[in-house]
Image 1 (cartoon, rainbow, N blue to C red):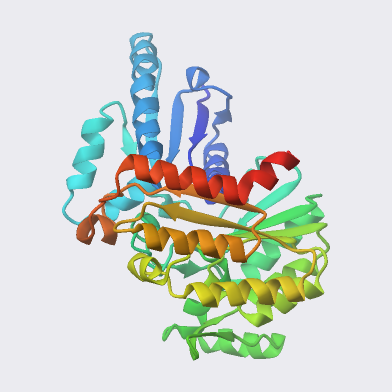
Image 2 (cartoon, one colour):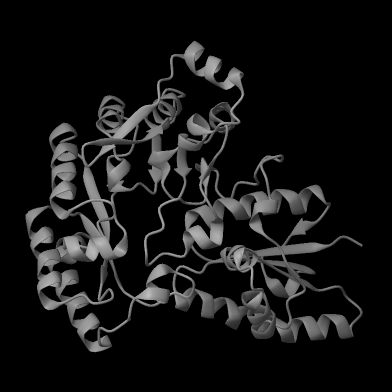
Length: 389
């Protein structure tokens, strides 16, 4: 008897790419994909923990599946519920074991908690569309923004081998994909671990020299910070022949002039860049552990706009972060009046278990103040976007 599998994905496009690889593993095991959890015998839930609401939706789904599971088992059928993704990643990295206990208590119907790290790149992903190929280039994050759980859910940043990425992109292009989306928590720091690794084989250095690939040392606050291979990787992907080459996400402090030039010189690279500012106040940025000042962000924004005239820039902003005063919020408003954003994804700050902010700061801004600030910024930044759709 064949086993039917169903995958439910929460969260970002990185999770969507992970689900494509999970699907490949299921198919290699002889399973058959179905479109609903009711028709399945093997259900994989790829989770997200970026906000509390996402976590709660996972709990709700698993508890709803409990009824289906009980009915299937009563009829003598198999019904396995697998939890993977960010929630499991965070639980694995919690050495106290308390988080695993909590998840098992909140989701008693779950059978397996599987770290997404165990799903590698041995198999060709089962693409979810026939237009855009999702290609992860890094996994994890080294930045530890004080509000963010990603370094705890996905671990430290690990770059995939350069040629492995290029080969996957070339294969996708040959198969008829017209667009490619390069994925990572911070794509523009791609390769820093490869270059800096003490265990890196000499063959890798020789390969870089042979290919004439030179690491770009991003300068931050007047100093060289990290080496990155992303400008060269992006150019090599662009030369394959895709109609559109896109990437997410990128951080302001690793956005080099070389990367700007690569985008400018390759018309098929996206002209919509997502560059999260989070706040326009320097003191808030420091509490957030964001490694730039508001003026540095404004300067970067200007360099991009001057170099690529047709570029659109979108951003993320958090309102009501711990201790945000009216004056600090006004500085965010002032930044949004100074630069032009084509769209801002504005979120109300919520405490996330395990983050630096959760441990050391107070979530002390009243919810009504957060909502008022959200409405003000949304009107200021997004009114033009709403009128265009």
